[in-house]
Length: 219
Image (tube, rainbow, N blue to C red; front, side):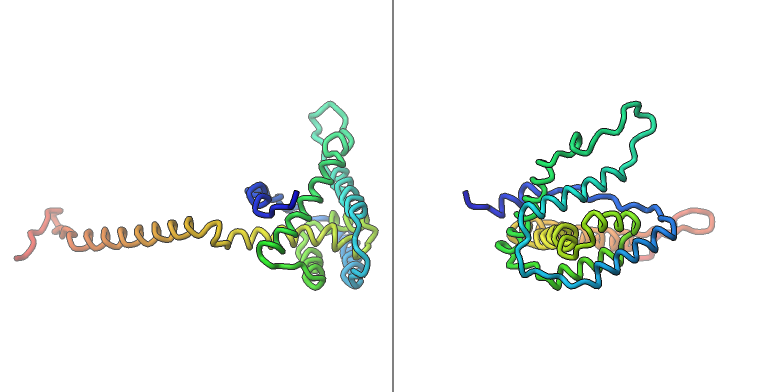
């Protein structure tokens, strides 16, 4: 069956965005992460060979293993922390990988937007520059063996694809045109109503004397 990108859009949103961590890592960990970042950002992206499905799944599994290992288990939970596969199976990770690929296809077919290597490199640079948890990011880079291709395909590209598809979808008049027009009309109508109410109040403002009595209007 042929892939339908419009069906995908209907299933994707709303999505819950992850909440960024505000914790500040120790200085020596931040420095170690910065070194790892520089190794990745300085290496060129080689895209001569296709990135195979099993490679993509393997590096996403590696990333999820690191994230699960870093997740703190509640101290008031008497049960031991389960293995990652007991909570997040490899099959679920594979489904997420496939969804990301479908999102990129939807971006290309619906909006004519292709993800070029330059854009992926810029996304890597943005991640390295803007990360609020450089030590955690360094662990992810270690899980990907500091391989620029794996970092590009499994860390940067999915984020870039989802953000661009979200932005394109949010501005798509085919999906939201009538709603946006209705909202704009309501805003204009509300503004005019408030202006009319203000004029009414100003035109009928009652003048009060020092004794607190209303002053009759002059003819």
